[in-house]
Length: 313
Image 1 (cartoon, rainbow, N blue to C red):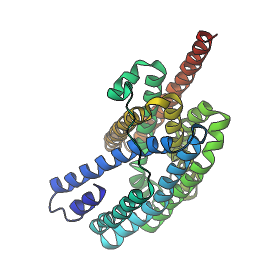
Image 2 (image 1 turned 90 degrees about the vertical axis):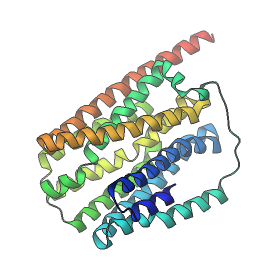
Image 3 (image 1 turned 60 degrees about the vertical axis):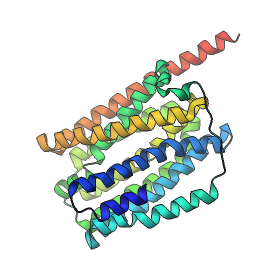
């Protein structure tokens, strides 16, 4: 579907056809994230799940390191159509690689797989998904409008923008490598700290965003923690819903995609209305709510575990 999307977008004669191609790539991205983490969870033993998810997200971060600056460079050099057409051979290679390397796995059907929304009846899961929703909403409220911020406030040029995207992606790759050790030492502390750090970065960007060196340093920190965050949330799915990883993963992906779209839309409205400061402040508020909801999730999870232990005594 990604390959088909690249062809449609690359040769789109008008905006509706272009949007049709974007729909195809949206479906492929949603399907990939729904199945990829669930597949990684099933491929390894339970104690190796965090490492498997870190490797999976490390691949994503490494791709971001390469793709974001190359896409920006190609768009400026030969136009956006050629940049999208480059998806076609990349997607074909990915398809062949998965076809050859992945083992055959039978579908696992559980009661909750039949209706993923039944999972929301569990308070810890509901609070956790709300926390994840606000986290990704807050992240993309700001990140979607990073380019106009850098061009109009920091006054970067095209080649500088590519370097900054490369820096964010590189730090994200580092983050996915090291987050496993933080999660093992303090799982919920790490999940709570990430949105708080990002909120602080957003606040400092409002104050020091006109300085190129400060903006680059702050965005390096943003890339380090933001790119690594999905490892934590997918590990949360594996720990909280071990028997329903596919249903829980699908629900998480649906909520995250909705959050990304909502955050991008609200960020754009605020950017047009009051400028980048209002967009960044909205991001800060959402990230603060995410930290609070994750804290509540931690408390509910501890309560559930203590109740479960008492019932077995």
